[in-house]
Image (cartoon, one colour):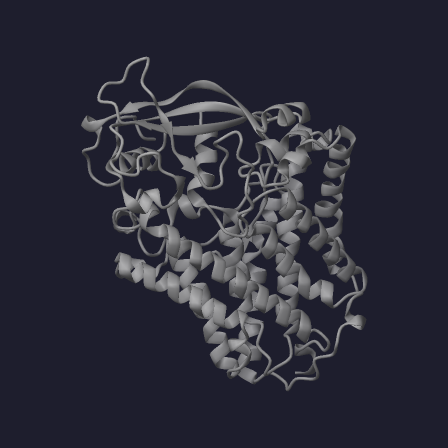
Length: 487
């Protein structure tokens, strides 16, 4: 069918596929490096315990059939290698059917991980990667032209990502409507980056311009993605620029980079297309591939009813999946912005008795704020799952969650897998006798404070988050309740 493929979009497809494969590689590498302490057999929330109580139909995963740490590591490292190969062009060097299988394997492997990952994989960018990866299965390779239907499905996904985020803000926190949210956001966001201090210190009017520009970028620009070129391409280019602004101002794993990747096929088909080299004509796609793409387009159209209803609802939900395969989802972020930043600081002591004079030593985390004199680091697109969950823990008004209880127990045991997730361990030879957690209020220092002290943060203790946990509390099965009541 002549209408099935789009001329002049080979370059946009190539850049999209290589970029998506690179994101996949980062995601799988994160799994390989962190799973043992988080969801391994002896992790904080073990996979075998999860699969024993959640049936396959609710969370389809290879690990329902069999689980071992070695198998999980093989899937994670295998996914990393396959994704790196695809990013290097392997999928364009094989027949179309083989390329389709490669992309399907990446999607199925990552779905297997996310569906047993529990709270550690409950972030919107995990679902976004799965939905994007599913559509990439039906985009073809260099052996045929880019299917027009799949390209429109990518545009539809980009629209939902941006428009959904815009709606959740407009309906959510009042500060988005009075344009003051970004006076707080750069300081209170989950994981500030090295430039976040500077962004926070921008003048108030600039923050208002930021907020207004955000509304335009997420509520007006996405609609233009469905207009003819070059307007659609210009709109996609605006999405790329705004996402780069977010990359510079914070750490949101691969969310921003994946959104950029989604925008590139449309952007490269717009005003830039004339300045880019033509990659040449491609033979038509085989009939089986055309039928597959048409069927998937009908499936996505049918499954889009849930996300559309959610976007139209006054009770719009953020980052919701409507089926266990996570094929078509709703997105959104920061419907509410915190005004004050709290951090949970975890400390240990080697003293046998806890007194008012006990000397506590602080554990250092890789990404989340800790030492006030340490400049926040740039981690994205890498995802530090423990650090992100510590941000949520600080926001929780109740007792520590189950995973936090087990985390403390692992520190008391000197568990190597857990300690590898941290930046610094103040007990390198023997584990601590007691561990506690203290809630602090953090704020960015002023220019004067920074010059006088060299500290990027000022912190004030608020309350004890978790009382000292000691030898009597070390016993207990993996994932069980500890000294503090688990939710």
